[in-house]
Image (cartoon, rainbow, N blue to C red; front, side, top):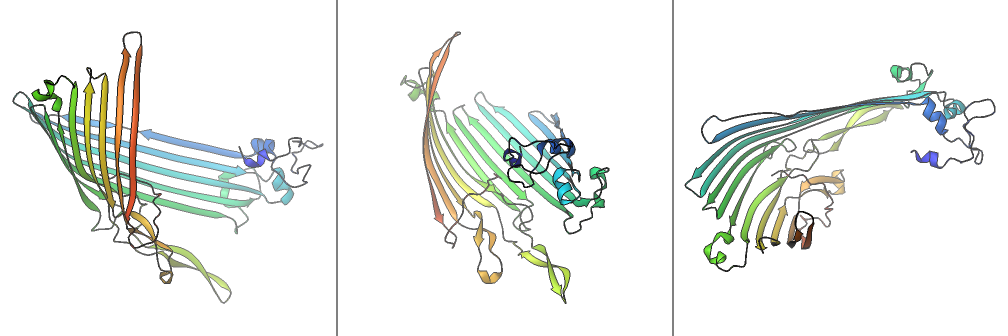
Length: 401
């Protein structure tokens, strides 16, 4: 609901004595919207088309090996046509004519994932799984609009938007965005005696948002889990129904910046020469080829405990996360002619502990009752400001690894 409608005098008449829509507020005697006239006379047509797909192929080229490829496209097409006729009460009073606007936007994206998995049982209790994969993600977006004022008639509506007679207010514009992310992944899982679990992961991510030389980054990680509850010396205690120690360490990346921020930006600017306005361009943003991935190093250690046939379970986790090369805007000296510049600056440290307790109090065919308690303590600290006095950490986050 338009806020202007809410401020309209409740006793205002919709029609005058001659049956025409009213345009004046009876109390302020000023021009105010007539909501009934807007509903009946304005045109606002929206058409949005969404197409989603998911295709995949899977086959076994050799024994114990599976190849799978998926392709998931998404198309979003948006059109909106608006027309405010000159017959609106407000336009009749100021003799402004009608106005129209046409908006078009198209977003096309897809994700293609390809994996080759080898799984082999070794002996009675060992298992090996090796995975190699490649993922490609791409998004393209383009939009345009045209707006026209001073339309001389209401017959054609928004279909002849070029009829606008007010060139000082007529407007048009367009926008384009493109983004591509490519990832290569390798992972090895090994289970020894079904007690000791090892995982090693290596991935390379490449983002089109960075300049050549900084597009790609390597993010390795590893994890280990020990099922202590399967050891005889733990079983003999008769205390735990489940006991598992786990730890992981790895690197991940973020490329949470808009597209094309590494390129110089030219802004339109007019200058007056001998009293005549002449179009031109100025440097609106300097080139920024040194931007690179924001990197996070994270360590996790956890302990899982189960009691009374796992009717009571406890999980304790400790984590430490260090992030460097933060993608943030830093102020520039005034003599540069620019206010700020996106840079890799600063470091942040996050650490904390979490405790999760679950209990199954009653469980039968007629009644289920369980409780859950979560306690956490977290500490965030900026360890390096990157040579600036203040960093605004309220930024979007997009995980890249």
